[in-house]
Each structure stands twice: as C-alpha cells, then as structure tokens.
Length: 461
Image (cartoon, rainbow, N blue to C red; front, side):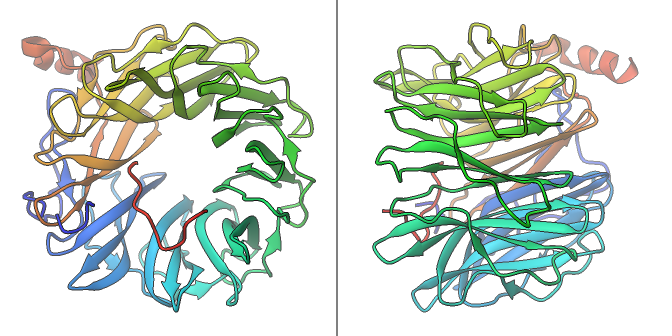
C-alpha cells in the first residue's frame, strides 16, 4: 500500500538549530535517505539521547537502520545499518536505559520467521552482530522488548501446527550478550495476541489477548524474580464478550490495564487495576460508556491520576479522539471529552503525562493524515487547541511520541510520492496555535512545551 510511494522532502541531517514554528515544535526533519523506502519508525529516549530505528527497502534490499542524537534531538548522526541475520526484517522494536540500547525484529527466511536482536552498550554508537533468540525450528514474530539494568526481556508470538499462537519469553542477565532458552507463557489450543511487556525492579509483566476459552479475554502474568519464573496467567476481563488490544502501566505495586471490549454489543473501553502486583484485579470499569464503538486505548499514570485516551466512532464516516481521567487512582472516571473534535477522521492516539498531559494522534482534517498533538495544563479538565506538527504534503502514518522533562519528541512515517521517510520533530516550548497572537504567547512561555499496519508474512488466522 504505502510501498512504492517518494517523499519530496530532501534527505538531511538536522542543523544544530532547527527552525521552530509558532507552536514551539521544530520544523520536521527526515532521518532516512530519500533513496530508500522506510517504514515502522520506533522512538526511544534515555536522558539526553534520542534514538530512532526503522525498517527500509533500498534497491530491492531490506534492512534495519538506527539513528541517534546525543544532544536531545537537536542533531542526528548518519543512520547506521543494524545488520541482517536471515531474510527481510519486519516489526522492529527498540528499548533504551542508560547507555544500553536494544533493537529486536522478526526476520523472514525460507518460509519461517525468527526473532533477531542487536544490542549497544555505548548509547548506540556501535551495535553487536545480530543474534537469533527464538528457536530456529519455530515460526516467531511480533517481538516486544524491555530493559531493566543488566536484564533484557523479550516476548513474542510463536506459531505452531494448526495456526496456534502462544506467547514466548526469553531473558538475558548480561545486557543482551546471551539469552536463556525461550519459555512458553501460554500453551493451549487457542490463539494469543501480541503481548506487551513491562519491567519494574525485579518484576516483569506480560499482558496479551487470548481466545483459548473461545472468546478473546485479557490475560496478565507476572514474574517477581527477573523473569526466572512466571505466575499462572490471570484473566482480567473475564466476560462473555471479546476483549483485545490491551495496554498497561505499572507504578510501585499497582498495575493498570485498559482494553477494548464488545460485551455491551459494541466496543467500549474498559479499565481494571490491581493493587497486589497482579494477583487480583478489581472488577473492570467501562470508561468510554458510550453508544458508538470505541477502540485502541492508551493510558498514562501520574500520581493518583489515571488518564485514558482512545479512538471513538462518531458516525459511519468519522471518528474522534476521546479522553477520560480518574483522580482517585482508577476507582472512578469522569465523563469523556472529545479532544480532536473536528470534521476529519482522528484516531490511534498516544498519551504521556509529566504533570501536564500530552495526547498525539493521526488526523486527516487537512485532506491527508497528519500528526496532531494537544496539551492539558489543568489535569485534563481542558485541552489546548490541537497543533498539526507534521503538516505533510502526502500524509503521515505510524506516529510515535515520547515526553521527558517537558520536552516532547515526535516521530512518524512521512508518505511520499515514490518512497516513504522517517520524520522527527521536538518541542521544548509546546504552546497551542493562537493565530496572530502566537508569537507573543511563545515569547511569554519561553521567558516564564494502523494503521494501517503493514501486513507481514507472519499472520494470525
């Protein structure tokens, strides 16, 4: 779909001081060469280092690339190739902590997909040779990765005979140099969906969707010994409807989870919380509580505040980005508000909170999909007018966002006329657009801010 299309923005390595627009976001830059068709950007931030990884196709050759900034995203070095092991890569993911950076992807060769990993111990200056961490005889895909100190954790899906998919897990205790044998988190006759992974202290959490009971439910499993052993999976949703695309957040011993669920006859956004490390979850709450389909939720936790955002159907031709918050740790949620609220299709939101709340999404109000972002400075009571950050010519996809100490980092796939490029922008003074007053608002603030996912050869049935 997107392959075969050329970005008119020329390839450039950003100058030390990029131009900043009225919203405070710098003019977008393209990190990937215009001669390559790139996709699936992944963004990670560690301290003042900003990392981007992606998949590319240049002159008929596929590969994985990586670019880093050591000055907070002001400049980026020349992209480096992460190497190949097996065939064409897909579904790349990255994680970073301190000077450790890990990238994982699936590699398709000889009608089989494997999980490949590379690591860096010097903030992405150099990477190890790729290693395979899944079984050579298994069909494995959709990896997820987390770093916690010297521990590296990877989860993925493995497909067996009869198109059965299970969640697999492997860990390294030496920074990713070597991995133990993969272990099965699920082992059944149904299908497990793409897992999400989170590491905190000695704990590792996995959450996924699973139809082993004939309808899809949300399951979570926890390890309290750095991934050495895992507890039996807990069914969080436990209802007669279909539940999917879960997300989670962890704070101290509390686990927060959101997902989409059609128990009401249409899809709603549900939330559940555990205060005992995942052994028991409170009864799920319907956060969206509407009459139209709601899906693809994301959440953020800041103190006792829980923030949830999702895509909400408005009518047969339109959908918007909605938001709801809890100020009592997730016991109750307020009435949802429409953040995007425009005639275009808005969806696939991302959310982050650092005292202020940031929600980004894709929106085709300009006539093509662009990356929009809105900010709340009053704990989600109101949101400032959305800002179009990408302002593209042909459109954008695969939005990524990270927020650290008031700096907002955004990355996305820029759709081109013949090829697609990896785009990046950041803002340290994010303010909304105010027309002719924008320059004065910005001056005052500086003195005083789907998806279409591309199908891989590994598909769930």
